[in-house]
Length: 471
Ligand code: BES
Ligand code: MN
Ligand code: ZN
Image 1: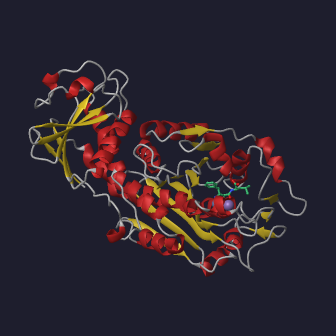
Image 2: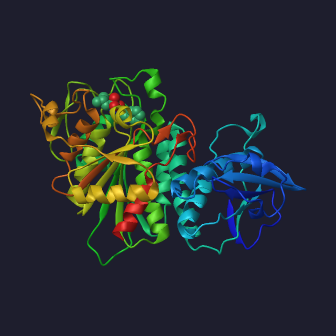
């Protein structure tokens, strides 16, 4: 989709005219639309189509001006894009609303439009009943060209990049992921450890999870150095389970249905490094992504057996479906050993318990480091991707006691999101570390506001905001 600016509304398939909730003046309209305005309240996301001669006009409600937020604008313009694509309009001219906060509100409007403008489908064009038609051009009228537009487009393209990786077929994910990682950006150095190199590194936990799969594991790193003078480096670790059947602790069909999403953490951190490089942020950041399926097979790793990871800690497997923490343990231990991180943030679709606790809209944030947690919470306020800090209650570590190994891998169900986070913390040493459990918001069953169904790309904008705070 092309974005442009113009002084006035021009020839377009539709003019989008915004109204704040409350009394309306017809004088605000460029053309007379008869009495259409009488019936229009201006509630957030409300739309009404009317005509002035040959010109289509779509009224869009923004809600109350006094309490307007960037997020409210994202939601209002999501409704505009849904309306326009359903009508197959190709060029829309958007009149900028009357307001003082031009930059801030532009962010909401542009992100709302661009985030909603996403189509993913394996359907063949000829059998699509009513194929959605992408909008070709959006022109913002009545506002000076804004420099921030390019950055917004870059960030939202990053969100789409994550959604595409998550929505792709599980069987094609490894290849798609490696291809994307290798061509991320000229300034990003990507390295991939293959199975032999993973064995050499001693990542016995990643290898254990991979045993049941015919697809080799991969350990991917993507490093961007935007501030060569600084020794600081943020390491983002992403859970890259390409498909999670549960392994021998097999999931029921219903629980498996969404499990192509189990590499959303890895896709997110890869996307963040891509965007950081494209924006030229003055930070150093490395994404670390252990990739494997968790499948069921005669070779599968087995409940009751003990495996040793890169950290040398031994883990007694009590549930093969608690695989994410195993591959993350090796990845975090790798980062601690080799990458001198100033902070480690891992992102993972880690627990169903987190979804039960916080639902589809909110991720769980866990950290032993108050400053790092506060920075992430601040970033989340800028991106409006809600995250909620959960307690890392150390006593719950009791639940991981093993008679024959250092830890078991799956504690009891109560507080399982916290317990999973505590397990990861064991591998971060004294490096400032945070864990974001995105099992809820990464993948949703039906479209909501500016998010499509399935992969949402949740967390990318949050982490980009975090890097901007650090830059
Ligand atoms: N990938 C799942 C977690 C998940 C659940 C992600 C729902 C997205 C939506 C993870 O590997 C898993 O299976 N977790 C188990 C852990 C349990 C066996 C300790 C869970 O949450 O049930
Ligand atoms: Mn699992
Ligand atoms: Zn999983």
